[in-house]
Length: 117
Image (cartoon, rainbow, N blue to C red; front, side):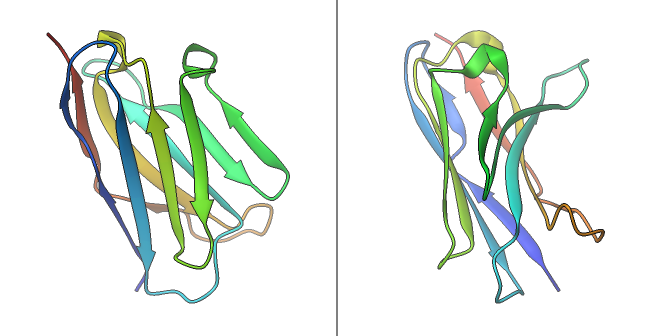
């Protein structure tokens, strides 16, 4: 059974940094595509960053501040978040699938990121 487990969330002051990790277990091969979504209270879930063999893409509001990376040997994806702003406060979810192959989409349980002074 595939599981995605996030870690690294917490409370940070504006301008601070956090690094989120998401480790996939229950599967030997790496996923084609992995990413991070977030959902703030009262808002829809949105894609923050995604990484695949062809490269990366980011939500406009996090470009230049967030960096997504992955370690295929560990089947782990990271999100380095710098210059955090209060509007980055949300629950962050890890996501993985084998796009463009049709198949299941996996989600982590979410980790809270709160940016506040």
